[in-house]
Image 1: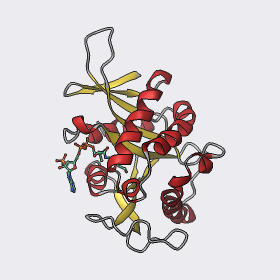
Image 2: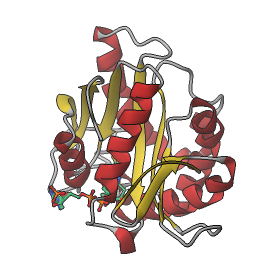
Image 3: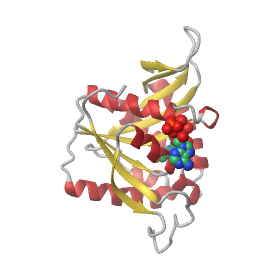
Image 4: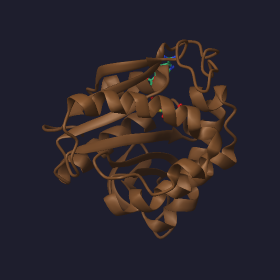
Length: 224
Ligand SMILES: CC(C)(COP(=O)(O)OP(=O)(O)OC[C@H]1O[C@@H](n2cnc3c(N)ncnc32)[C@H](O)[C@@H]1OP(=O)(O)O)[C@@H](O)C(=O)NCCC(=O)NCCS
């Protein structure tokens, strides 16, 4: 990881090749156990892992993905405790991504519907919109501000790379709070109680949050 900033004993930096297996494991665990739609769809960790591994080459190339590691003595690396997998919203997803994790289909369909609403009103071309896609923090490192720092660090990186807007689909009450706190605004919601996939109300058991919120934030000015 290329170090970007340090806060409260945690180092935040750009994803590199050697971080990828750790990122895959962390996001697979965090999403399959705690992300509302993955839990409702009973998405196994193995399918999240396939999905993250398939997204990794694009994430590496686009240099927007941030990892968090506990600070460690010089010459050693602390364990990975958080990731924000981000990419360019204007470039194509990796080919064949929809076949990598078949049980991801209802989640993908909900997110695609929200994204289509945004794209119908806004020109999204490469290099303009940073997409903050999968945010995960290890359970043992939760509730100490790591997600907030990952988001802020990603916004600063996107700004350095010349992006103008940040876009996210925040799926739970905690992530919506985290994004709101760093200045994201609500654009549209896909309601969990109404959404159906192949005739099934797959997310209607989700409580405590109305739905996935598409949120955006203009880039410019200080974020860190
Ligand atoms: C969502 C997740 C990334 C949060 O990570 P974290 O490092 O614990 O988050 P932070 O400590 O930075 O911030 C948590 C904030 O949510 C607040 N919060 C906690 N429970 C909440 C709730 N039920 N409703 C609203 N806000 C809540 C906390 O008070 C804190 O806000 P504060 O800093 O203003 O006090 C983590 O729980 C996770 O990995 N979840 C599983 C994967 C997932 O759902 N990712 C989001 C997909 S978009």
